[in-house]
Image 1 (cartoon, one colour):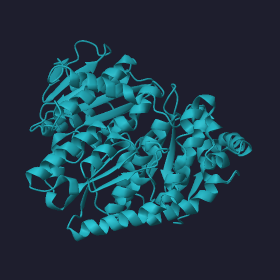
Image 2 (tube, rainbow, N blue to C red):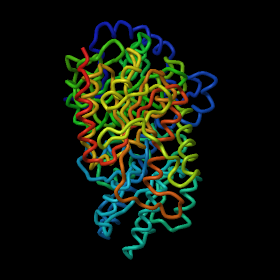
Image 3 (cartoon, rainbow, N blue to C red):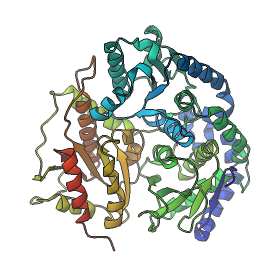
Image 4 (spheres, one colour):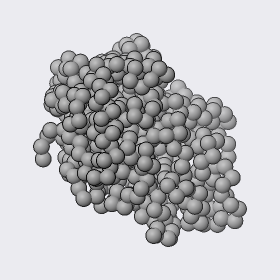
Length: 541
């Protein structure tokens, strides 16, 4: 497959609907102005924010100086036997490095969880050769700060110097920069502050952990640089213009879901990175594009996409796809960033803010600041190893089984709504729960997303609260066998995890969205019972 980055609209009907929007973007010189970092593209209300969020358009040039610095640090670490890289980061600080290293086939341990078991697994992986990259744009991300504290204590207990094993990536002037410098951390990288987190793949946030893990970051920048001229061109062949027009035209016709499946791109996990970019950029003011990553092009939701969804292949065109995008990883990242920003113009929203993300954080903080352990939740019913909880008053009394509760949740969704599965579990040891996404999509006929909590709160969490209000939400939490203290904080990891789940559920319920929480009192048994309960649902159609 060619490495030239391209976007192809393969559905004739969608191509016709998109054509007027293509012509509008060309006439407005929107792509050229975006490349020139013109903050007026999204209207007066967005101009102030946009004026400090557009440096990502030239990161393929401005990040070049980082390559030698990262390579030198990696060589220095290797000389000291420090070859295991653990990344503590959330959202834009973790998603890009994960797809870069996965595609390159290099090892990177990504910690974007508050599950004690998953954090403990990371601690038990040869600490003597471990370096931790603490990555946070704000420098105050609670999950990342917790990871830092846990690893500092673990290093100290093993007689290892924590400072020599800590590397920081943050914005200039953040509390994390100050802490890193005052604590004598091995290296503190400050990123360009005029780049938002979800557009930061080619900045220090993406390049430092990926480069230290051994990925070819110079090649990544080369690929983006070779793609840039086609993306800034104000003509009909610009792939970013065509992709933005296709997604926006589909949205106008009621297809606000964007179903993403790999069709042989050679890129590993691209949809997970694109998910945050699309959802946080467009999901606000009651509109937006909901990304739905699925397992493959034959998966439920992609092969069976209805009028409310646009199937997009990451890779060569397929029979089921309406749009396909393909090329190198660096080129694809820049293509989707350009297209998402241009789609924001067509949709009439600011693609650089995230006005609804803070609500869930505030609710979680409120629970953490309350009585130890938070409020005791009384389940509506208990079915085997699963407690059934409902936020709000949408669940009728008398529901006795998990299957009945699931059926009620699905019934509460509009015909063109969606179902979001949110798993606050260990995404390594409890990975079998991912089978729920295709099973629920197949049996309910709803577009179904799957997210690991709290990871998704830094991604699709914005869309859930700010986008189309037609979602229903299935939270899955689990009992913790062995908790972990967060040094210097009055809470444990499981307490934080629980507060994040309950806090987000409260915020969704305040927006009149149905939230069903299934708590597994025994994770192993409960997961088996949950899958069986889903299989007992009637198959849609």
